[in-house]
Length: 316
Ligand code: SER
Image (cartoon, rainbow, N blue to C red; front, top):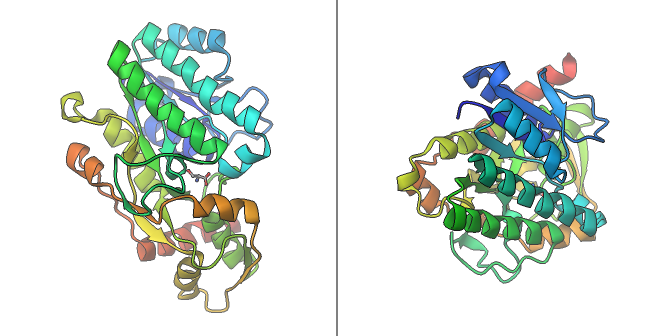
């Protein structure tokens, strides 16, 4: 990794990954790009450019001009947003990835592709979900992520493209907001606890899902990209998790710090159905064995840090 391109650099993961990689590799060696039509005030420092990963010509131009050797391809629609516009979700998530893989093949780049717990479906074993198992997702998000996993395998086996990736759980963080996922409640709950002392949760209290704090999510991406190729059997779509929790468990942990915090449950049937089709918790032994995956944060250390950091951010 000498010259890096990041797509989706203004997103929840992208904004923090950009900062981390720039600290590690130097500002000028990390080209951060955000969507052409994004009207988000970019939270990231320069240099950054505009790029729609569906536009192969522009992608090629950047990779060629900047002599990119590694692409972190984070541009994607999340699960709930994707259900609002399935055609757009397929176009961005699947066709965007095909372009990135094609350009990686032409210019000999490695790529990081984040898959998700969403790549599983209702027929998947829900507890300790194995690395290799039944995958019949019933959301367009999941279908696009599963297709992405298979495409990454294909480009490695057919062309030797170092296409690596993990299946992320819900990511909890305090810098950029997640953009329209099903696990977003876990982030919203912190803002509500600090600002309103009250939160209306759209998932049922006992809905269990895997989660991870942002520093661990970033560490997973960087460690996997640095791992010795010979040690990787699966290469992409590694299950990784740090904790599995329910809305009521997260609320109880936050209440230890903010006792007056109250959560009401106003269920959104669309997001509830999505969450119900995903695992309770994944088994991540392949990632642990092959490239030393090891999360740092537990539920209690994550909640403590999140509340501290977010309170600071909201005060400033
Ligand atoms: N956080 C994502 C979502 O909820 C799952 O990968 O859509």
